[in-house]
Length: 333
Image 1 (cartoon, rainbow, N blue to C red):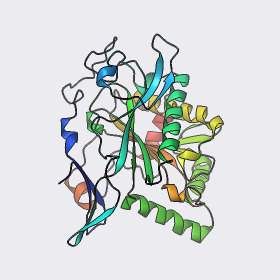
Image 2 (image 1 turned 120 degrees about the horizontal axis):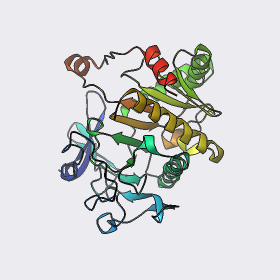
Image 3 (image 1 turned 90 degrees about the vertical axis):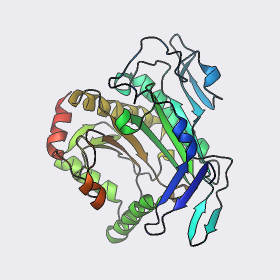
Image 4 (image 1 turned 45 degrees about the horizontal axis):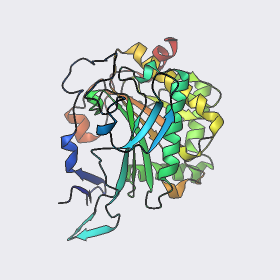
């Protein structure tokens, strides 16, 4: 088998990515029960200033105003899940379907400071991160074979992070995950029945109900979803209807930065050093003008581990009540 390959589960039609090089990644988080936050650059950290020789080529960079020349930068992932030199052509292998594992995998180094985390970032630093997210999304969508671009952040070992230095990841691929197609089909069905976007309707209802609201500014609302799967789960939903994160307006970026910052700080206020995933849910490239789709951000704390029933039934069990979580998050500031 090639180093990168994607196979389709014939029963569920879900795609499974095989990436043999991922096992060689460093695991700073896993080696430590507590987070070690150094005040100076770490000589072994590839993301710290001064370690550029082990970092690789810089794809994108924004200038800094501190003692370092850069504020954030984007580089290829040294241990990519997918490979841009592979083909995206589908291959039949007997009764099965696969592809070579085409895609692009980048890292966004969010700060030159090894000892920072998202809850510590200033408004300006958050805006720089949003600018990186948006710029790289637009660049990756310039390549016609990239059908999906997904940005995500893993914080802590339970969330899959392998390095402490603050960073996010962005992956582009040629496949459409079955889960994404299923969500898009639900949105399409709702639009066909009601003539409106399901997220716009949900957002309007939640703002009026107020029970699950966490934070709101001019362009974004943060809320705990009605059927939250885990404690303190949050969604950040843009008020302006757009199917794709790529359509984010420049004057909305400071408000998105503020919303993410407020959400993460409130999570930290409720739970010390939380492990969490943050994902930007956006549409496939060929659906960017669809009226039924609406991009949003999901923050999923990893405070517990799924057990047998949850794995077997795919039904999450949440030990918290969404309304109570929202009240606690709302009252922290």
